[in-house]
Image (cartoon, rainbow over all chains, first blue to last red; front, side, top):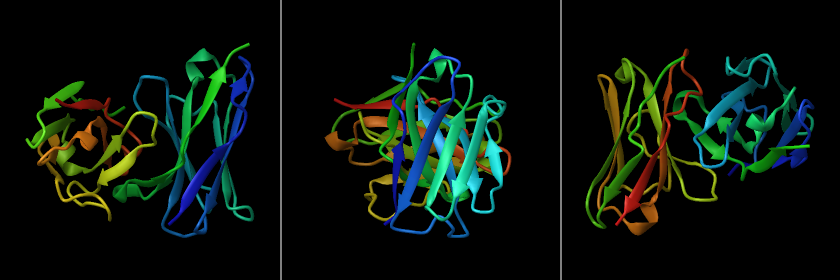
Length: 119
Length: 107
């Protein structure tokens, strides 16, 4: 059973860059059929997909965030990462990483990590 | 971007059937997944490819998708089913879009 765990700073200052890492255990991140996604959820609100990466490095991003988002992958560490630049208070949310099985859905999720944007 | 509509809330009595809808243009032409999210927890996939249940998901959860509407049905609803439910369509152009979520209350 694959497990995912987010890590990174819980507090980021406005205009700075939010950086998070997702560590995958119980399976290889290079398993060919999966994408690896980041999803966020502001307090009391719904889910927002941020973007995803394939083991080849191919990425897809939410158009509303595309100009500020970079997702990368480190297969040697079985990790993938999120970078979100020029953050504002609107980026305050719980950030989840998830295994993306395309038409079969997001079948494994991390526990989520709260990132607060505040000075 | 692709627009999805879910009712904000649905109420059901224990043991009864709950139906949660998700509407979008030609939604029936896409695959739909459903997620359950209890307070303070990560979302849990309960239905994929419109009507398939992942291993470990109770048989009381079922799904359908046709026309412009997908439906998650919970038969014999239990108190533990009280949660937020999100739909998510999939095709090559709508990957990653979520519905706004429906709060299921078991009264």
